[in-house]
Amino acid sequence: MNVAIIGGGLAGLSCAHELERYGIQPTIFEVNSFIGEQYPHVGAALEIATRSIGDPIKYFKNQLNLNIKPINTVNRIIHHSPTKTTVIKGKLGYFFNRSKECDDLKVQIHSMLKKPNILFNTYGDYEPLSQKFDYVIIANGQSNFSKELGCWTEWVNTFVRGAVVLGDFDPNAIIIWLNKEYCKNGYAYLTPFDKKRASLILVVTDVSKSEVDHYWELFLYSENIKCPLVEEFKLNHQSGRVYPHKVDNILLTGNAGGVIDPFLGFGVLGSVVTGVMAARSIILNKPYDKLIEGILKTNLQLYEFRKALNSVDNDAYDKIVSSIGLPGVRQLIYKSPINIIKYGSYVLKAMPKKEKR
Image: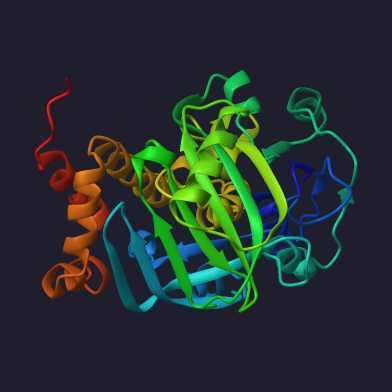
């Protein structure tokens, strides 16, 4: 069986690893000259969004045969709204390095491949490849091919402004900011590499590449962030729904498969799961959409939660952040088996809204 994989990212490498387990050696077409991220940052898998599968590290190992190592656990989440701050403590998730370093997620999975056949600096086009190969896995991290195939429905369109910041950080804490003034319907967060370096990200909805700079400066000023900034970047980020995920002999995975979290934009879990399940669909002759229905259901719930959060204002952000700190609410959201993402959207929609003048 001949399999082509377009993209040497998380989904593509996870797919290749699973195919190797069954004796299939895929050809990976990677447009870059390296494995890893162009812009260094720190991703996360938060327990509140991965509750349906339990501990993601155990899930990767036991269910997907991938021995992935995080750079740290998330033991604190610091929530900031315009005038309120709440801190939650506990076992809340994991941080993952996204860079070119040896503990980067892509580099980790690449090191697990026995005989990787990667064509670097090579653009993969699904149309000619689908004629030459038995299957083509689209794992290029973009929506362009999904749109061409008529499978993409856009949910969220944002510009991301980010940087590596230097200072003194708690390596187990994520800081999240919600403020309509500089985020619009987006958010900002800080995730640490270690005690001295962190990733600072601002996500702003419905702005242009040039406009996001204004919101970035407003964010830094409003939150009095004066840490030295290095390795700054900005890029367009889209999240959407994809259907179907298989067109003839072409399978869509990762962001091309619409599995980037539409709430906070993290894509580790969805990319790895869809990559592995695409391989199993081919090998075991099982319906691909059926194999990934769990991650699709979670993303739909996250999208509904995001839409509900978009509908509230800064006063509501203050009320939400204050309520998170209340013992009963904190227990319900972060330390119970209840799917708070699913039911939280109903609560947000029911919150009173100010009349627009």
